[in-house]
Image (tube, rainbow, N blue to C red; front, side, top):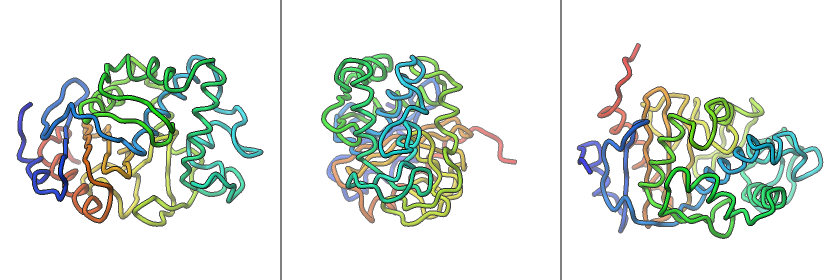
Length: 277
């Protein structure tokens, strides 16, 4: 894997193991650390679950407007953390009124897909997402909200699909999933505080104008992705044509809130190919 000075700082992170890679739509551009080592993905699992749910939508196994969760909530509400369910699974608001981050909502989605498809959710997600993208070192297990184990290399494969969709989801579906769902909702971005608005797509956290944020100042407002409590992330910047993936063996904390934006800025400064206006 070609080294890059943009990734040099990763070796100074206060972690035992860190693997970080950068990819374009066609190929991995640089990497550091054990890119094939599987580690807990925590909430980056939600990207895989969202992809599987959206495959089920495109296959007409379910619809975005199907009722799901609390009364008045739909599949779309659950994907966008707009159902009113909190982390504890209790209802804290009416659907479509607040952006409340919810593991429980994604677990509901997993059960719904399993019921409609007639197979365990882990099997469906593996066949619908992991196998087509050759994410052989990633395993869906336990909770659809946070249970997957996977490698940085596999997350880069997911990044390439999102930059140039077609193997798993149609370009139209990726565009819809990475556009704000239920615009204008305020909420708390875990680890970074209240955001007004706290924009989210269909399973994808959107950078937009959020501050503070776990991506860099150089990331375009169209950047989307997710990070996990286990010290993992994947961001995709369609304007730059780049994706960056990270897995570590240290839980998210102040170290990551400081290190990740700096890394993202270094990656974009090194690899950005678009002409700034």
